[in-house]
Image 1 (tube, rainbow, N blue to C red):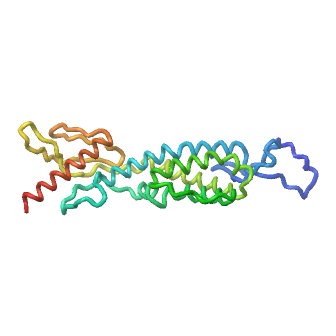
Image 2: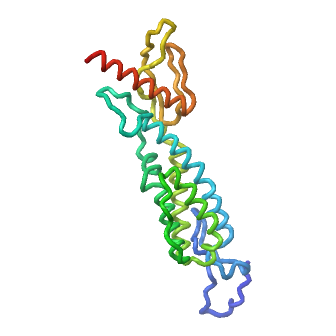
Image 3: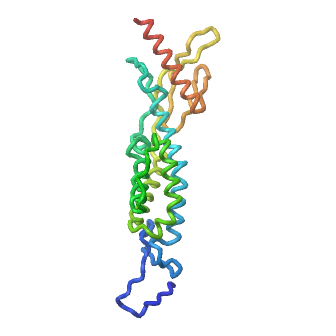
Length: 241
């Protein structure tokens, strides 16, 4: 039981954890050793764990988003028969683009910086570059926030929801079926193109041609596949012209 020195004072309300209950748990009071803090140690530890897991989760989602966007360079030439990327999943793109994970972490960092009297978070580049920096700041300053930042409960709840979203999407619970991603650009020994239909899913960048046996198994090889397909399309377009 909690050692409550004011248990005989009906007007006294023992402080509770500002983080609120976890799913399925009741709202809980702080222990005597935690008085002076806003958040109990178990909730602080759970938040630190979520912050540690958000980095790998974001990298996994960002890789999937990269595969969806294909290997085309920004501003590159296009053709009417561009090879389609693997099927887009809007929830993945929403989390990895501006307004997603990076923006939501930045907003929390900015609120902490404001409370500390510091300047807001500097621009850190793309979401891929920014997410690790935002997470580093939040991890380093979490001990201060759970003891001194009055709005920490809302931020912990926001981090809880963000972590749950990333976990659910990364788990790919609604796995899409295989779809066509264009023709195989591999060549036989005599130089002729295979041109067999290739398929892929959003859950993997591994592609195997069932006709000629060509394989693309790494992210770099996926990019090479997309570039080779684009080159074939460009050649075909030139011949047709």
